[in-house]
Image 1 (cartoon, rainbow, N blue to C red):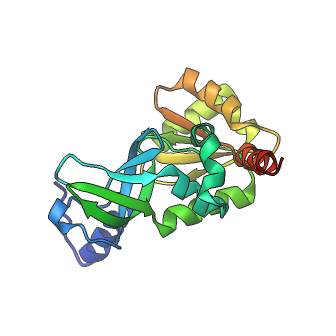
Image 2 (tube, rainbow, N blue to C red):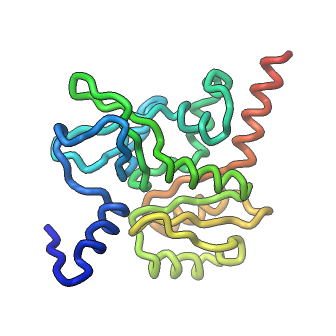
Length: 212
């Protein structure tokens, strides 16, 4: 438990709740409200997200719905390649993820991606640069690994997306899977890749296949 005191305690609490979320009961969850959480894994086409409930339960978000909102494409067009798209969509364990709860039935909570999450991914797609998402690591350690491996020469910057979560932005001529492979050999932390140009190519190919 963390106790915060002082004149700015209320502001600090609101900020920490925005970044980390807060512990809540299942009965406290409100449909149509957004909650800050973290991805705990991907099961099939479902993104399982922990929003800080006391009970052991996750909010299920359909990955197709996330990608269709980001890409502004008909969900049915994405389904044939959804497994391959998920693999390169940067959905890492412990990655910060805002969800909007849309239904609660039989202790199962169904959600949609929240506005902050959608806006972040849309920004990433607009920039068209590959990213490597690294979670559960201190920035000082990450910087040390980047210098040791020479990866700083292959990146534009490192964006902080959470308390211990970062998105490494690759140069246009550098691919995320190459950077990720080097990082995996240097650190045991969770690493995933986001490759917008490859995702767009897959989606475009699906459209061509449907026409033909």
